[in-house]
Length: 252
Image (tube, rainbow, N blue to C red; front, side):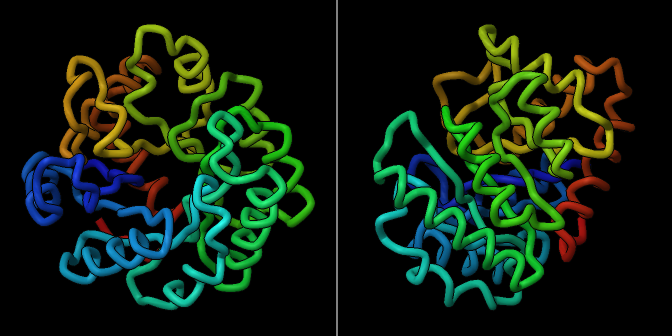
């Protein structure tokens, strides 16, 4: 059994209704899903979907792209009983859809919210590693922190793990050009690794060009297990156990 620690099944790019995607995932051996919020609308949708499915949980967060909307737009949803984390939040200097100072302020606010509510933190970082670590260090790393869709190499992986964080690997690890990510996945300590789809985005090879689905998280897991020279079933159990530690409250 696998856990998809990060998906967006409410997104119209899925091509199927959220309930259908959840059902297909369970049929494929995915025991639990975490649906991720990125703003007020999607955070609300994540909570609503989780409320309908006993093996689905939600996060509430403000993505760096939407940082100008203000953390106050999502904060009221954090108390919902199916919420297990704050995020995804962080810094994205590739697109800079929000000014960088606004991104950093929103990131800091959400770190504080995670700590205040005893929730996990889900981080999105792109082309902003140094500033991401600087904000984390200044605010204090929450007890349970997950770097979603990890795209760094071994150096960045070490810096994350030094701070007690988990690394979540997506279909990117299967891409032919993702040598740094594979290096990080091979190095990552066994108690710090989880897997995700980021559906409907980043479908793993050989599904590129089609919408991703939580049902495909096993393909990511199998790839990483083979990369690490681990038995697939053992790796599934290990990443499921890690997901439960990273997100207390989920019960595959």
